[in-house]
Length: 388
Image 1: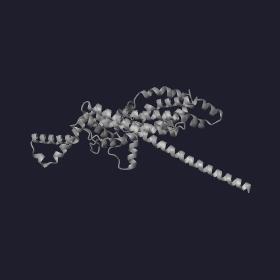
Image 2 (image 1 turned 30 degrees about the horizontal axis):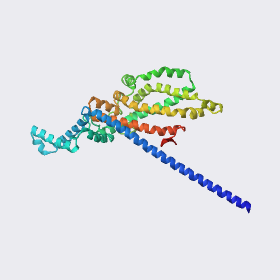
Image 3 (image 1 turned 90 degrees about the vertical axis):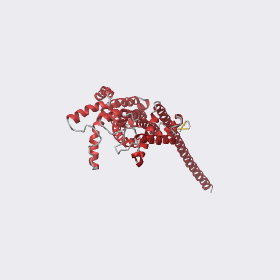
Image 4 (image 1 turned 120 degrees about the vertical axis):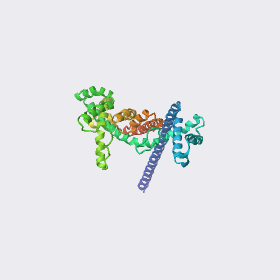
């Protein structure tokens, strides 16, 4: 009897302990989730605020020459002229009457939109429109579909840029990663010295290599197209379209890789060499762990935050360098659009490009914090000023 009572008490206590542990674990998970959501929200608010400041400064700088007001006034005049052509009585007016009619319509629209108010008040309205890329109509440019709305022009060109540079930089990332790891194992070898010798070649921009590749493979050998995204006219069959697209991407991808690959391999190989000399790596070797496990756990993972940061920020800064690159290859992307906008003094499109770069940079910074936590177990999401 006494034994049964003792056993029963022991089992009850154990059950209580298990429930208590499970309850504590649930509370801990719930608190972690709340901290993560709070951190994510505060991070997004901070980044949006930062982007807003950058956009507002851009608006102020552009307005020093009256550029922003001219954007709105040009849009109003264009809209008034289009509306006037739909009025049958407008056709029978004299030149002076037409001018007076258009001026009256513009004046009414100016007052309706509040353009007669001080600029500092209206600048916040411009900020709101800029944050949503609602910058009205382009002054000179238009999309391939015939639209002059700035947002449509940007959205039409953005996929082409993402396709080209997304593919190029993914290839660059994995090639440099595996090549850098391989060279870190063979420090001082022939290929290590070869990469070191070729690293200065990255000082030459990618578009310069592109000119030589076009000269050799398009003009001389006639193996690949000079530029563009697909053949003209574009193939109707999806398979033929994909093949044509791949053929047109060969030279741009090759030029981009030649310009970046050697310096990137050299930089990342140096990171790997630094981490390979740490004490914990020597301890892992003393424990008898395999070389592959040591590379994955003790060299690659601690190095990845540095590599990812360098790669992500380089990717963003290279968007501005794509202006000449896309122009050389006649690639219909954001870079070529930016070049055409600058050449035509199309202020709405220029401002919209600045806003787009700001959003891309903010998104990259936002994602980097979470990528760090995924690739490196030592990194923890910060919340409330304390490490979680």
